[in-house]
Image (cartoon, rainbow, N blue to C red; front, side):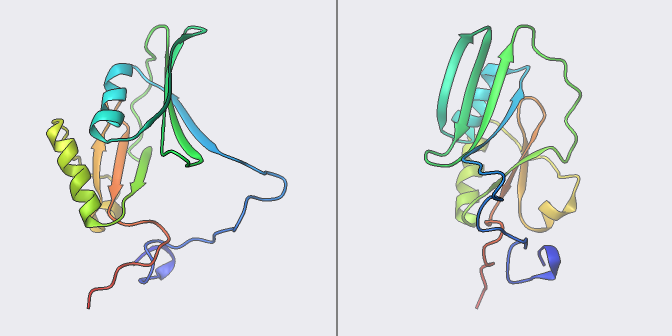
Length: 159
């Protein structure tokens, strides 16, 4: 069962058809620093397979990379500047969740990550394991959730 008691949808939510009138957002980018810049790029680009939309070196002392899907208004930016940051360990609920289009898409992603030597980790929240999602830690210890369904879309039914 998804959120809100619905068993016909993978999760349920109250979805607005557009941004509120006072907040006309055209794109969303999440950004964070890293202490492992080259390893982060390899993880997300080479092993997870996210496209690099932009990358720069030494722009006002910053190196950065933007990952996302071409044409998608949602992006993730990773930067480094000077001495690598000493950040507290990420909380287990700090997650990047990628909703994949079914078990075959999940299997393909898992094979690629396995080829890179990346092994799944156990979720603190049982929700993910109970629903067939698989989690990995990125080089900074942040969790990446690979879910074999798309949030809010109807669940597949077995005849």
